[in-house]
Each structure stands twice: as C-alpha cells, then as structure tokens.
Length: 406
Ligand SMILES: Cc1cc2nc3c(=O)[nH]c(=O)nc-3n(C[C@H](O)[C@H](O)[C@H](O)COP(=O)(O)OP(=O)(O)OC[C@H]3O[C@@H](n4cnc5c(N)ncnc54)[C@H](O)[C@@H]3O)c2cc1C
Image (cartoon, rainbow, N blue to C red):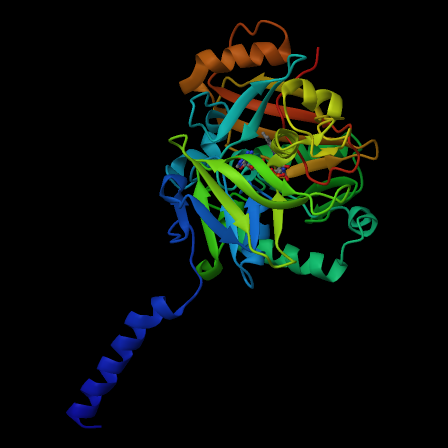
C-alpha cells in the first residue's frame, strides 16, 4: 500500500470514530441530552404519552414506550446524578434521612405517627431504597395475567443494566448461617427468584458500592423528553357525551419557579397519561383532579369528575421490627445480601456498618421515635438487623421502611 492510500485509510478510520457517537442512538447515564429543568419547558406541548412520575415504574416504562412513540416524563424531583457519591452504599442512611428541602427523600409522618419517606428524584424509590433486587413471585405474574415471556424479557433487560450479584462477606455470611440455624429453610443458594427459605440475592449496588437506579434505564433520546422539578398538579379530563366516561386529555404541571405549563395528548386514540407517581402521589393526583370519593372531594371545592370511593383508601405499609445493635468495633459495610423468606410472609434482612455520625441529632430523634425508648449510647457504627413482617402478602420485593405504629 503506498503512502497516499495509507493516509486516506487513516483519515477514513478517524472520521468513522469521530462520527460514531453521533450515529449511535443510545445514551448512557448521567449524560442524557433529553433531561431538562422544567423552567425551560414551553407553556404548551403535545405528546403521544405523558408519564407522571419518573420513579422505579415510570422510568423503565417511559424508556420502553420511547422506542416507538413520543413520550414526556414529568418528575417533581431533581437529578440523581447531581452529587454522585450521595447515593453510594455507605451514604444510604444519610441520604434517606436527609431532611433538607431538596433531599431525594421527602420525610413525612402519618396521622397515626409513623415516620416514613417518599422518593423525590428521577429514579424514584430506586435512588433511596435498600437496593435489594428480586423477581416477582411466579404466582403474582400468573394471577396478574401478564405475558410471561415479556416479563422474562423485561427481567433480562433490567438485570443486564442495573443488577449485580450481592456480595457475601463476613457479616452477610453470618446472617445466612444464622437464618439456616434458625430454621429458615431450604437454603436456595444464589437466586433472583422470590422463593421461601434462605437465599443470596442481587442488588443495584455495583462492586464499587455505587448505586444504579431506574434512571439508568433510559437509552434512546430521539423520542423522549424528561422534565425535572415538574410537579403535576392536575390531570385534565373531557366528557364527550353526558354520562360517558371522562377521557384524560392532558396535565398541568408547575416548574421550580411556580410557573404553570400544560402538556396535552395528541389525538392518537392510543395516547395515554400514565400515572406512576407512587402509591401516595398517584392517589393524591387523582383526587386533586376530581377522581375520588365524592364526600371527600366536594367539601374541599374539588369538582368531581368521577366518584371512585376506593381512591386513596386502604393504604398500608409493611410493619417492621428493627433491631439496632451498636458495635464497639468497625464492621464491614453491607446492605442486604442474604435474606430469609418464611412461609408466614415474614422477611428477614440485615445490613451492617452504616455510618450515622454526621446527622447524629436528627437520627437520634428518629431512632427514638422508632424504638420508643431512650438510646443512651449510639455508636457511629451500627449493625442493623431488620426483621420485616409483611402484612401485604402479594408484595414481591424485599422492602425496607423505618416506621412504627402506635
Ligand atoms: C427506605 C426504602 C427501602 C426500600 N427497599 C427496597 C428494596 O430493597 N428492594 C425493593 O425492591 N424495593 C424497595 N423499596 C420499595 C421500592 O423502592 C418502591 O416499591 C418503588 O420505588 C415504587 O415504585 P413507584 O414507581 O411506584 O414509585 P416511586 O419509585 O416512589 O416513584 C414515584 C415518582 O413520582 C414522583 N412524583 C410524585 N408525585 C408527583 C407529581 N405530582 N408530579 C410529578 N412527579 C411526582 C416522585 O418524585 C417519584 O420520583 C424500598 C422503599 C423505601 C422507601
């Protein structure tokens, strides 16, 4: 090959590599070009699908829809990538218990005195939770009438992108052995399936203890736009004929400066508004939009769109008994790896080495409320054993909430 053709070949290769990023449709977190602050949103816009709440459900749903159609995601919280170390395993409790106004976790206390948290960030609960990953119970998939092949494809997609085998170090090994000794049998080894007995599961923390979340599941930027700090305040409905079912046509959302924007559905008959704002947020939004119990909405001056007495009713969280064991010596950092799932629908899980020192004041108040007793000496290193009793038998993930009921 002469010098001229070698130069030409090199130039061609350089051009191909330089253009490669522009030819490729996939984008990876955190450098998304389609995520914007809602203050930059137009006053009015039109979309095939509007997803309210970019949480654990909303993100993967929007990413999937965006493969073929035009999608708008409205998320009231900010970006989980703003401060990367904040979501690392070692900062789990500090981030969850951060009481500041822009915290990823919004603290609230229920009317009967239970401390709890709602996610307020793109990625939702998967940015603040314990990160234990499980597939759904086979029975649940069958009873829900879901297409099992599609469900399996979805598992593979999520597992390839954000799921890692949970490490089994000293403390988690002791937890596993303790569970077996206590008779939580059989031992199922490592598995992502939700089955009775003791098992080692998966996590969304990688080997370097960095969290991955539902927000990492976006990829194709061409059909999607995500607005942050976009709080949906109302779903708009029309009724075509007297007595017919109301049809959702759009939403009103507020940006960080309090300016209102309206997003409408296109006229496509398949267009939909998907409310994935969490258990509390979804019911709240429906009620604010006029779908709920007449006797609750009308006294508040909310115009009734549909009398649906069950909206917002029957809320229940998992009851939890937590044992906090102060350790005089440093303990390895671990969140849930070994779990016990008993026939009585009790889940037993444990973490260790979580550093609570920087927010001691807040945490001590918090712990007092949980334990209902004075903790005189709280070491900055904890071994936490959480015995989680599920009262809702169909829940399919190992959940982890601080809280107590009076
Ligand atoms: C402390 C804790 C630990 C947990 N541990 C685990 C675990 O280890 N494994 C597991 O599988 N599950 C765990 N969970 C549960 C899991 O995180 C939730 O089940 C899951 O996140 C629910 O998903 P979702 O999409 O329904 O709601 P979310 O993930 O909460 O998403 C709802 C989103 O909607 C947004 N939103 C709400 N209202 C509006 C509005 N009006 N406008 C715009 N946006 C709005 C919120 O900001 C949020 O981002 C845990 C939960 C908590 C709190």
